[in-house]
Figure (cartoon, rainbow, N blue to C red):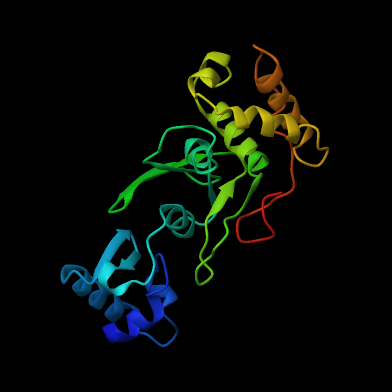
Length: 224
């Protein structure tokens, strides 16, 4: 493959792998070519088998949320990363945190750290595709209430109200959550109970978070 052809295919992508570059290519030869382009500064290696074009050849700005979800299928952005994205905590969060039903891992890539926390299948819900997908690539983002539930569940001491207070959740969070718990279809029953405790009760333990649920994977119909 000529580099001009690679640019034509991938200039609008956040990331890509050799397998995405079309049928009929000699994969071994293509991998060797891509290694040479990395050394020449034309390509940037993100992680094992995943690349992006150098800035001079790419038409878009890298979105770490998209990179995190595309390079690790079956994950969605959650916890502090999603809360920050939704404007519900004041701090900028430099690390992109996702949850996945696969193995937990941390990837240090040229654009920042990507971390993946394990979440059992029964709790894998409450996410949706971000707007503005590019060439079919987009991030899966936890809804605000689900990002908070994931954070409470996966953080040591997360059930303590002192932990929640330490997040310095914005006033909009309480207003948003109060509205959400009044919607019968907004949250599963156990999650409604948990949100009520966070919003209305100064203490209490997490309960009913992991409820049986139908399987729902990113790339299918969404994480309702």
